[in-house]
Amino acid sequence: MYDVAEIRRDFPILERQVNGKPLVYLDNAATSQKPRRVIEALTDHYERHNANVQRGVHRLAEESTAAYEGAREKVARFLAAPDATGLVFTRGTTESINLVAHAWGRKNLREGDEVVLTESEHHSNLVPWQLAAQATGAKLRFIPILDDGTLDMEEAERLIGPRTKLVSVIHSSNVLATINPVERLAELAHENDALMLVDGAQSAPHLPVDVEALGCDFFAGSGHKMLGPTGVGFLWGRPEILEEMDPFLGGGEMIREVHLDHSTWNDLPHKFEAGTMNIAQAIGLGAAVDYLDELGMESVRECERRIGEYAYRRLSEIEGIVIHGPEKDRTGLVSFSLPDVHPHDLSQLLDEEGIAIRSGHHCCQPLMRRLGVAATARASFYLYNTEEEADTLVEALVRAREFFGAFA
Amino acid sequence: MMRDLYTQVIMDHYQRPKNRGEIENADIEEHLLNPLCGDEVTVYAAFDGDKVSDVKFGGRGCSISQASASMMTERLMGKSREEAEKEIKGFKAMMVGEKEFPEMDDLAALKGVIQYPSRIKCATLAWTAFQKGLDDRG
Image 1 (tube, rainbow over the protein chains, first blue to last red):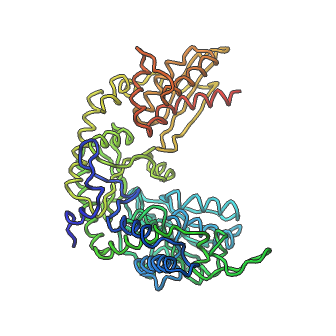
Image 2: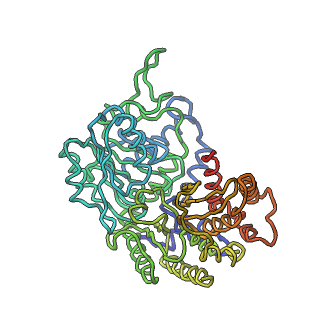
Image 3: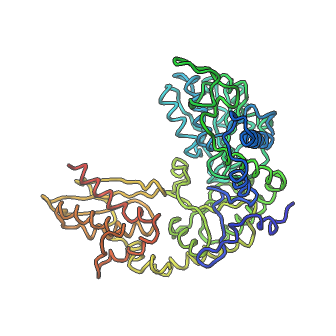
């Protein structure tokens, strides 16, 4: 296990004060902070190696290409993928899922086919499929959630059937803190000759991921939620499936041969990387993955499980609070509602004390409707957060409530 | 500071809102969602000739959006269509710092919101809904 106090020193922003108070950053599910090593990887690239990748034969182009492709290898290893052939860099999870919805969905979905999602999807794993369904006539089906936020697996077994062409599910919910049984869903999908996509935006930063063990065909993630820079994410796909797919974006680098009237495509994964990619950011993501590997994802999970449980316990002591999601087997985030303070007002009052939490629908409007709320407040912890910070949050919540109560 | 934002006037309107409810067979019934936070407001208005004879609002939202909606209903009651549009335009101008807030008026309590750009949309939500309702009415 790593020492949280020690690794906090790796994150320059954690020294910041907000409104005269030490920053308590609890909006990690939106984006994580960056260790010095990632920030330095960006500046080092721009100060010493910057060039476009793949095509140049000069020294800087060679160095940039090696670093960019090295980052690809690192991310593939991080996901326990057999090799980097199926690892495509994208702008993030949203783009990764859109890539599959276009390049696989538009080609393979037909009227009468079904794509199975869940009620708790982030808009990024819902809207791309709505668009694909509109374009192809395929139908979307939704696995319901039980009242504790976990998936209704009995209903999942009924829903996933011969019409199913794809099951696409969040690995972990950014609202409910659930960890979905994606291995079982992948089995159900494959029994019905359907493919399985796992949206790993909220899992890859927090849990050990092994795409082979999960049994998925696609795995999507965002770099900026796992200590990396914004602007880079990834899609891992089984190479034989990616091979059969049409390209997503057309342009430079994704081609082999271009004529005025037709073109042929580059090898994987370059077929899906049109134009100049976010090179420095991909290299930065490589540095983030190195950092996570050194801490060990088992340790990260264990530390977050502890802080998540602690925060859950402390928050549940607040009278009248409603915590959304299951009591057990949670990730390190807690979404909650206080009966007499709107989440928006709450986050404003907490900001005054240097505490950053998120309030709103968390890009999950259908889930909010299912929970019967317009918005929730969410405190999301990461590997550098401490129990003292959870205490600070709870004390500030109690004060916020008193502040509002004073006007009643 | 929080006392500048959450003034007594705002909290009064929030916790004891004016004209909260529905109007049956209203001339204007406009539902609007703040896509930022999921807050929603429905504004109802009845007209007697050219005059707003009744205004009500419903929905759920933060203190700023609810208080502002409550203030709006008081402000627009009895106004002609033209006057109402002028009020809405004027309020939006205040919220972006292009117009002074009226002194000795509840609206002045919303002045503190300007310092919090992410909250300005909360304050203008109901007003935008009313304008949209007027536009749809033609």
